[in-house]
Image 1 (cartoon, rainbow, N blue to C red):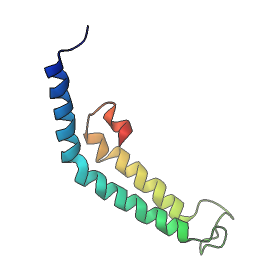
Image 2: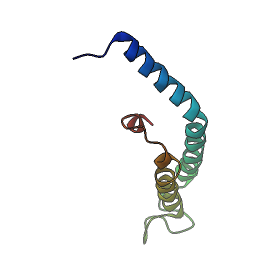
Image 3: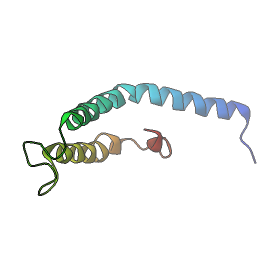
Image 4: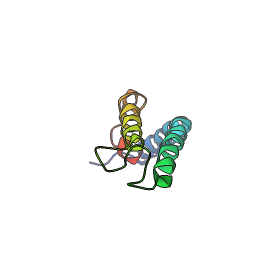
Length: 88
């Protein structure tokens, strides 16, 4: 059984509105992660100030993991959007 066309349009409109409302948050998340990745990219692997690969994760990798964990557990966890979460 398929939903009527007006229901499909309504659901698509609702999704579009929700994505627009969340877009500033998603842009801020992208900027934060990009900044960490840019610092990591500039780092000469193995020649970092903190020893690189010598005895554990670099400070940049730790910062990236911490940032991603925070994003997933705090701001994004407040949204209950099902499959849309995988698109983000």
